[in-house]
Length: 586
Image (cartoon, rainbow, N blue to C red):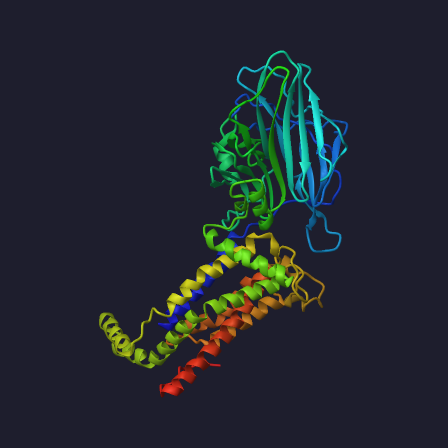
């Protein structure tokens, strides 16, 4: 039965590694240097249906650059397009494309007409039959300042010539949250009714991996229900003329478009009734414009001679879990932490991340935090590991008798099963007892694995020596003699990337095999298991270095744990006159 447990463990590990390789999302978000972008065209006809989020059509780029307001806050920089009042140029000051010096800053918003347009718009639409002239994508606004900072909000104004003045006041905090106040001042003789809206627009289709480990695409929380749709589902479900693919009404919430590490989201006033919509306007094939946003269900009524306003927020930045949780508390944004894809086991994955993040803060290094957490888990499961090892030891003691029974009843499976059950009962051994501790530990390590892959904290986090980015694979390579040969063998095949840490992992796995040999298997199976460390070494070679370091450290701790447990049991056995538990071959 030891071999069955060994095969189960091997199979589960293979599922994790192969599944990881298959489901791994490819990050394709463009990064650029911190600079002012080229001017952008401005589409977006207003939707007749107030419950629908309009999708903009691309327009010709104007000859003259659009007027812009510079954005320079604590952690972001960019500009605001006064044509259409679009937030469409934003880079993150603290995040770079790579760990190399001079690497471009990560761009999260980009104007229309560029390679990967991604932007945020706010505005108003008329009620059914309304004749109010509302600002559109070609409206040029007037700003009261030419610079938006934490200390200096900017107010945009536009007079429609019918007695109504539209104003958009935009402020920003030290991080990634914009506060947007939409105000209408009515100097006319009649009241007006308008529906405020806000939306995130993406004018390109990122590379789709078909994976499920990390969600990328439209996302929302309405009435505390999370929806994660794919780009493909939007393209298939969008129905002209409104191009709406998904809609849900509720109170408050948030919605946007997410990447692995970055999020652009609009957040309506939390006590307002809104309709959330996903939409896609096709431009042929997979090309088109994705829209995710909100439209108020109740119109904003502005009496003659009066004014009315509504407040919303825009998030555009990195999905840092503590920051998302802070916004959730201070702005009462429901389940904002779900922008990070903790998965179905979030009840376990999220607390594990909290501990990891705390350890990272205390130790100042995410790699050390990972090792410390693994040590804590090993200590927590030490009693279970003791029980598992004791059961495995007893099973090894019974192997000669089990082998004799198999030889004796090799042609009678039913009789063999009966005799083995009798043997287990006589010796007081439960062959399944060793599997239970292992099964209990699997969810913990799976959640840890998930945390390491979906959270931004490991991205560009250094370790020691040559590891400058725990989220990237080990840059050393055996096939270049670790830099002595100036060529890149991975252009021939990704399998020709084999760093020092993956080799260390393979070595620890090989030693574990020797300490825990799989008995009673035929020569073909024996050879297959001997090759497992080599196969897994190449699997791990293209995985993030943080994961490889984790598995190496886990293997070392497991071997140390087994040594300690065996010595304790042998000491106890010697004191009681019992036989020592057999050790694995070395």
